[in-house]
Length: 67
Image (cartoon, rainbow, N blue to C red; front, side, top):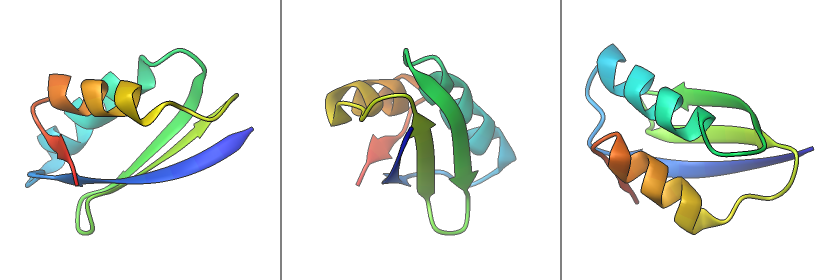
């Protein structure tokens, strides 16, 4: 297992958190996603290290940006 932390900009509410969590959770190998609204931090636990491009694509699909 590996844990990586990313920073997402543009989240303002619980719906934002849910959208990012849902999209990032769909990346193959992801086991857990923890989003902290106040800091914009997204901590992802996965079987293997994730390619930041796949995380960026999932975050953008949710309508936000990786910092």
